[in-house]
Amino acid sequence: MIIYKTEEEIDIMREAALVVSRTLGKVAEEIGPGVTPRFLDTMAEEYIRSQKAIPGFLGLYGCPSTLLISVNEQVVHGLPTDRPFQEGDVVSVDCGAILDGFYGDHAYTFEIGEVAPEVKKLLEVTKECLYLGIEQCTTANRLEDIGWAIQTHAEKHGYGVVRDLVGHGLGRALHEDPQVPNYGRRGRGKKIQNGLTIAIEPMINMGTEKVEQLDDNWTIVTQDGLPSAHFEHDVAVVDGKPVILSTFDFIEEALAKKKK
Ligand code: MG
Ligand code: MG
Image (cartoon, rainbow, N blue to C red):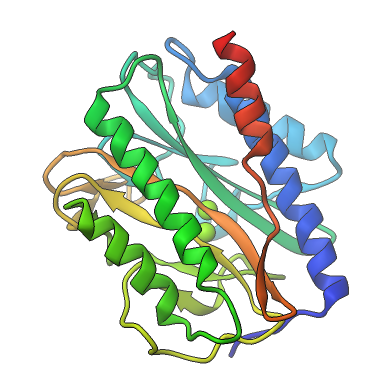
């Protein structure tokens, strides 16, 4: 059952999303060659708690960390380790927080130092997929229009669209109805209505769409070992149109500052 939110609830969800956005901004300031996933995880937990919020993933389904950090061929759900990032890695950092009973959940894929041009392109296209999916979140459309837009753009570039993991409804639970796949058929699925709140999160692989899980029972990797990218925003439908509750602004400001 889809739980549609009031405008007041959406306002709280925006605040929850922004806690995550600012946390990812902190990650952006620190991430680089030689930095460890575990360092970022500890920092993120401390920052979230300093904002009077609660880490959203820690303890949920037995998750041992605040961040899920997935490097290169890892698609999502990578557990923070002590292995330092290396020049040329791409690193998806996914973060959740609970504020006043509502979840924020979003993710960004970072480049460590100089990244191969074809990997850079994968990240660019995946981010474009995210915004193309968001554009479809209007009350004139149906749910599968989101996945259709994402899939069409990704496959145009020859990339694999992960099928086994999907976006989702978001609210007082991290995973609510509906499921929001990154593939779909134009004009299919439930009609999109005002008050819908969802996390849209394309997971796009350079090669095959097929993924498998490592023995840690968490980390999802591409079957062919080629890199994967992941970007996620929280979106509400208000007055017939999509409103993005999260923002990459803090990340992009931090990254621009580091370049100088
Ligand atoms: Mg997420
Ligand atoms: Mg999510």
